[in-house]
Length: 126
Image (cartoon, rainbow, N blue to C red; front, side, top):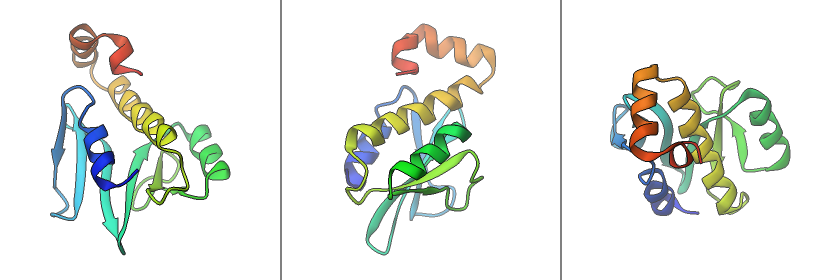
């Protein structure tokens, strides 16, 4: 997966908004104003920060060399995933979906219910 395909996949998530609050070099992907991913390039290598369950975050770091503690993030709840080919695309997509779902679960009940009603739980929490 490269920067372009990661960006395209993140934007497929319902009602995702891309923002640049940290400047033009870091894309931030949000749902209802809450960040669920960042995407940037550093030294020619694309990377994404994704929210993760703390136990799963550590397990992914142990399994994949391209999964690191979240850069500039709470390292307990965020991982940085290098888009260098060391993590299979389907696994990166699963992590992106999980990050989105975790943030949706943290939204206000009315916001969460509206998303679930509009898109269905299977789409929101895939």
